[in-house]
Image 1 (cartoon, rainbow, N blue to C red):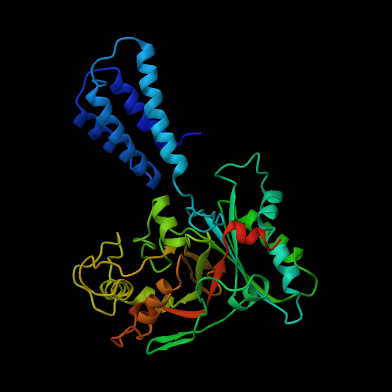
Image 2: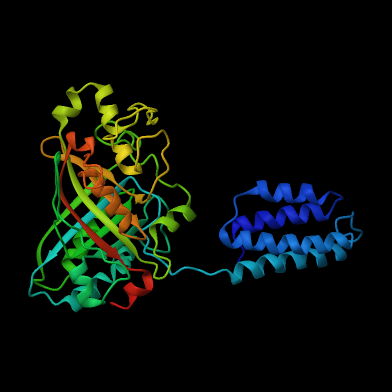
Length: 394
């Protein structure tokens, strides 16, 4: 079945084949109908060549008779469909990897006992989507009650059950003048998103209870929430530089050869004494953005968070690396609260660059001022295998 975008293109073709118009006007409308996907771009090139030939025969003159129109439209239709079918399709990734966020998220961090049977544990983990389907009937779900979930594995565990990944993803301990970034390890991690937190609780409970008896050493389940429309608990808007288009997010997050994704998870505890008492201007200099609307500061310290992440403090500094952030606030007023940081990338080097610059290991010995208002207490890397890789573990 043709995609909605492809149908829009075909509608433009059909509408213009019924009237006299210039080739230039036709191409202009094609270009402004919608942004084409990679496969559609290929189709546009083929289509352009085909239309050039059509023009030579006067196809763009007003056509007489529906039969002639139908025949010409079939030619254009077949060209577009042929281009789309021939386009390479990357291996499928798990549902959590590049999909949009929801009102709530589950971060389930699991440590296994040394005596746990890795193969048996992996078989259970590979059935995550079946667990999701028991919580939300796949034939009845909609965007309001759907659960988008994925499961990842630590490097040692994945090596035992599936072998080597294409890239190394060992998370080193880091230490900087403004604080440490501990390497916490872990064996299994589940990231799930839903507008209903109760469904995430159900999934966490079902997943833990489905694992082989006496296989779990310990686990932590954290439930996050949207705060003041995409703000961090510090009051700053989170994820300003995140890609919003599906194609861009897949490009950054998904390893094209496998459909897999490398993931960083970190637990940050905010210091609200600092956040609530420090002058806004100082906080903005630490972050590199205005607190009210996330506008980037034209002039900002090299130690600001924005400068550390992009690689320089110039205004709108080109980013050296990108990730797909899916971080959200968590916690309670009575106990700890902060940000659960999670990001996806096709290569762990994207994380390495950013983390090194946060602790002063990025070549200039400068640390990230964001660590003045929040403390990193836990962190590691995971590999979320592509769907076909995950299925092999079942």
